[in-house]
Length: 290
Image (tube, rainbow, N blue to C red; front, side, top):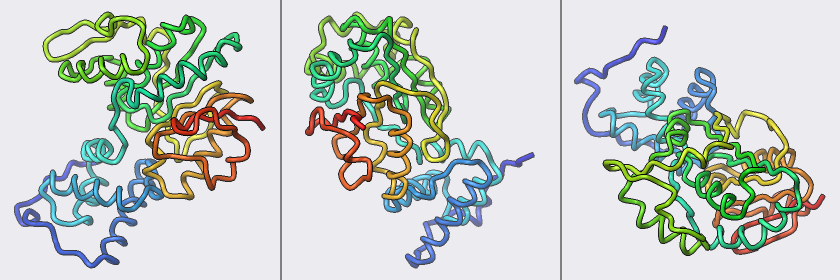
């Protein structure tokens, strides 16, 4: 049984000045320990990003070194949960990049109408804002009733938030503006009920959504999809891991299915680039053609 460890006063103080080689070694040992003990594999994440996130947690916990963080993480599952929130990518918004949703409505929706049933995978869905955005878009286009959305993330904490469907009320003005710019067809406020500091979205929007834990690094494909969304996740992976995830998406996408990436992500230089045609170059929307 894992025993929580409380840092002693002797461990607190300013962070230790690091030799860069020693720092990299300690980070590699920490990530290897996390993988072998918990099964979360961050070993191929972009180094600069993972380093920044680890030090954020070290400072929050009042620790001084990466080795101290390793000792805490390996003996305290609750500490691992906190670190997991730092390491996983949880920056999202409803109708983020409105131009993308407008393009999806104009270009991808007509393609989806040709299928009798539509299966959509939101890989790395975080707290679910983009899943709700897609559910709204599909409802307005008359496709929701013959669609199934699979929302997955490595982090069970953010998945529980996504299932709850409660988002900060102070972001509704931003989300409403995004929705309008994305080509929304109704009043955005019709989709939620304001309560205290939160906006509770209609349960109808998750009636056809399956929330499930899935690790893009270690888990395999679990179905065949007509659309795969993975926006602003691959930028945190190194090149080797990006290639592995592209292989996973290729295997999981049906012929003529749509792959949607983030604005700073691309298929260029991937061996799967010839297997797709561009549906919209700026909005990083592709269709599998072979």
